[in-house]
Amino acid sequence: TLTDLRCIGCGAEIQTLDKTVLGYTPKSALEKGLETGELYCQRCFRLRHYNEIADVNISDDAFLKLLTEVGNTNSLVVNVIDIFDFNGSVIPGLHRFVADNDVLLVGNKRDILPKSVKESKVRNWLRERAHEEGLRPVDVVLASAYNKDDIADLMDEIEHYRAGRDVYVVGVTNVGKSTLINAIIKNATGDSDVITTSRFPGTTLDKIEIPLDDGSFIIDTPGIIHRHQMAHFVGKNDLKLVSPKKEIKPKTYQLNSGQTLFMGGLARFDYIKGDKQGFTGFFDNNLNIHRTKLAGADEFYAKHAGGLLVPPYEDELESFPKLVRKEFSLKEKTDVVFSGLGWIRVVEDAVIAAWVPEGVDVLIRKALI
Ligand code: GDP
Image (tube, rainbow, N blue to C red; front, side):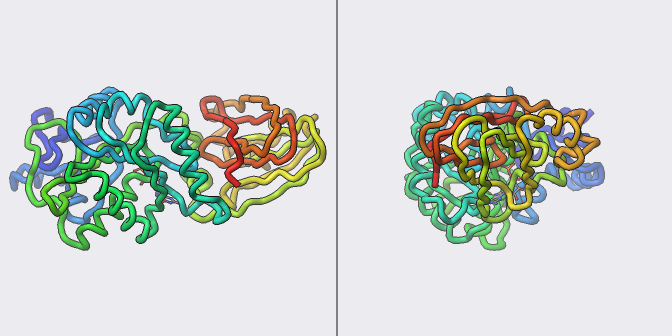
């Protein structure tokens, strides 16, 4: 049994079965580690030798325990979210766990936003959403994990707000937390090794510490899976459609009422009532958008999902949730947001219906542009 073996880096129980779970160690590395007495899990090994954080997920229970521990510290909590998917980024009840600690909200993946989007608007919007969740961040920062200047600015902000305290970075999976932390490590250390000693022998707090100049740390925590993310409903090869890599180029469609747009087979937009007008879609540039008549749209979907309307592909249809419908009557310039996929801007008065896979959010907000 491996139950007594722990990683000397993070303290996680060593296991050789599941790569995506904490403590994973390949069998060969386990043998070698036992021989030399230096047993690291793969995550810590990679950090030591490649300065790279790997993704790990932990169970909801373990995550709650971890958040509780964070709440008991005196630290700055950095909550990384995906600007493109606020709802899929929320850590339920975070404000209760962080207690009196300051929270810095970091909206990641800023590079995807079209240049025409005003950043102050996005930041205000994020702040309002955070308030709705009961979270009162000390500040909201937008960043791209791929942009060196953003990383440098973010580190300045963190330095400012942490005021000598440790920094805990928290986030659900897929928001880009590891990419962001890896960029921070690069910036902070160049190519030198990050962990030099075994810091938590025998603890189960699954965290990784990045030393800062003054003896405090940036601490990476594992994420939890947010099951409502669109990312969980598309195959591996289509993840790029829900996590665009490039600035989105908006596309406008002139629609009469009685027309429907399909976003692949992932989502649907019905124009029910109103004058002819232009609807602008903000989606990954490669997402295939198909226009058809509202009257026959149900049959159209039944016939073409997995074929003309992809993703999901034929072999994914069975496990793909059915699309569910939500109707909105719009009176001002509004974005209809398909959580994690993108949004459609509506300018004139309109009655519309938005369809998303059951479990994914659809919402409206004052137009960002
Ligand atoms: P984690 O699960 O939160 O650690 O997320 P990852 O770091 O694994 O990132 C999830 C996905 O988002 C990956 O496909 C990344 O390449 C992508 N990603 C991360 N940061 C950014 C960013 O700033 N911009 C863009 N466009 N994509 C990002």
